[in-house]
View 1 (cartoon, rainbow, N blue to C red):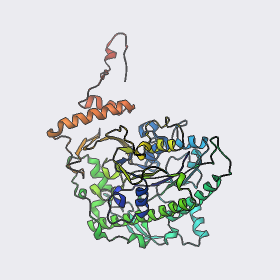
View 2: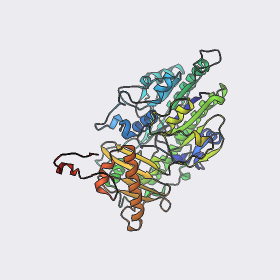
View 3: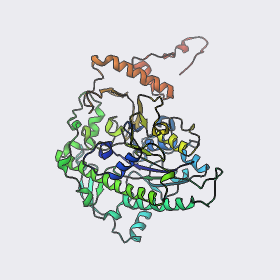
View 4: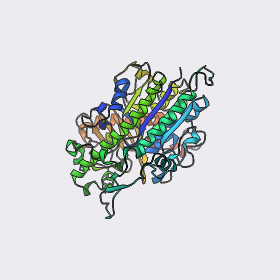
Length: 506
């Protein structure tokens, strides 16, 4: 059987905002129910903590260095702005195999091609934040007699040159039915009904004798900042409930200088801690608003009788700092706050209420989607299907996560190796980082230069180096002469010293 698939995705979403992941305060009953009915992945990571490259990895099943869409176009500094012609995408393969494809919500996958170019139906909602001036949203408001978008009480800090900082939050003067999140859920439900009707018995059959299955994605723009919410959600949680992360005491000692600069950009120190506590409370309200809209969509799946044939995914493109390490948003700092993301998957007939701790990635969703469609997973070259884990099997699995970053505002290459107990980050322009995550889960103490962990540093560096070479990620060239690694090729290019100029150049 080829499954229908519902793919629910948020943007800039912290794991610790969900009840299923241990938050005792935030109300997320719909996502908690999805976790109880399916599999919760506790070590689920993004390949890169920035929107466009992460979403391109989901679409292609390829690591960012391979698909080469490395930056958000709004802050692009010379990288590609669209996937190359001929790049594999799961959607085009599913479309060619008879799937109905829909995408409602954020499309942050390039500037020349839209989601429709990759086979998806749905309104073209490009950009990084709710496009509240989009004609389809304005038509939705008019059709339903709802008031227009209006905000007050802007929250922002002050940047180093004295100008107002980025908007972090504001009050929205609209009822919940007028919010962009409610609109996205409504459009999703409308498309779900259309897809279900097309796939009913008696409709055209595919070559397997089945009705046309669907892949329907809802990509919410939230809870990405700025947190713009009606009063009921803006004030839903008492800031006194918020325990600030230990890393608000970050000193940036022994850390790359760029982290302190990013802290200044986001103006964290220009706002009192009470305001940071309130911002986190507002962020929780945003998460609850999104959870309620997800609940509406999941209820529609049940009402349409699609449960027994529909797999449901929930994840995010990356996390959010919300004050951790005196930062907001995301950026060139490979902390757990922005690299670890929620990951839930419910597959009909699979065990319920599972918790898996294998290191898995957003990129692994690609092969999973293909396998659920009965399609070839081979073209998703950096992806591995999660279905064996969902079925309760125990295959051999990697004991690490490898991640990369290429810049935002300016080029800034990084590579990260995250193991069960440690994290190594290579920053060629600056200080490298090594964290003992058992002793220092908040990643406050960089031990890269600590002689007591020299052996661990050497082993992790070699492991990262070998993995990069195995992948074909040319970042390893920098590491070859700069670090204590063993290699098997001529790093000096000494062939130029010979008369015949024969040799291998790697």
